[in-house]
Amino acid sequence: MAVQISPSILSADFARLADEAAAVPNADWLHVDVMDNHFVPNLTLGLPVVESLLKATSIPLDCHLMIEDPDRWAPAYAEAGAGSVTIHAEASRAPVRTLRQIRSLGARAALALNPGTAVEPYEGLLGEIDMLLLMTVEPGFGGQKFLDMVLPKIRTARALVERHGGEIWIQVDGGVTGDTIERCAEAGADVFVAGSAVYGSADRAAAVETLRANAAK
Ligand code: DX5
Ligand code: ZN
Image (cartoon, rainbow, N blue to C red; front, side):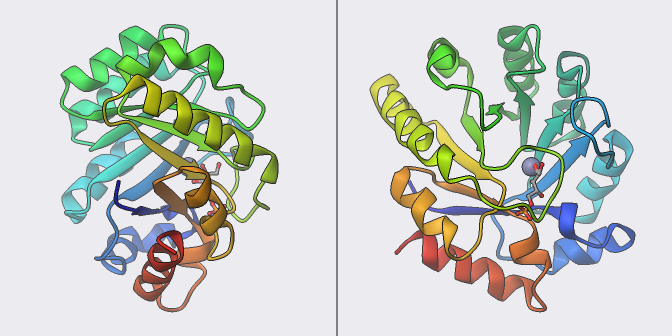
């Protein structure tokens, strides 16, 4: 599976989101962190901003919902036109229903697990998802240090996905840099979210290419 890079606009200038999207024409996705100050201790943006971004860029949006009631809100992001919608296993009360709704509305459906959440209990959901997001920091903020403890879980997830068959991507999010991306790729991840590593660089497009090259090493 080819490496994919999803720059996170959490580290972008929120007053210039259209320009910040245009700065990464070589990105496969644009990662949009939706935070509600309940599931995580931070507040970012919601559906109206996603709707505006969809008009401002042709890069598909990868919406990561860090919200308390994803079952209520996730379908609206798919309906608005997000290419991928991710819900957290820790927050969803009806993941099967919600993941099916996301797919039926034409988006890719993804399930996210916090660093302390084991992957094995969710093996039964693999048939409902297109991507598994393994958080490599506790969700809520950009610029945190990568948690090495998640590496064995990436390996376990890769083995489960291979056994399941089908095309399920494994995404990592948090502390992904030119250095940590190599270890994540080696462990079996193929979609990489990077906030500060891209938007903290003067040349955002070059940062995307460096990440892509390092992941493929
Ligand atoms: C954190 C968010 C991430 C964040 C990553 O909760 O889900 O997408 O933007 O930022 P970096 O890459 O700086 O760790
Ligand atoms: Zn994220």
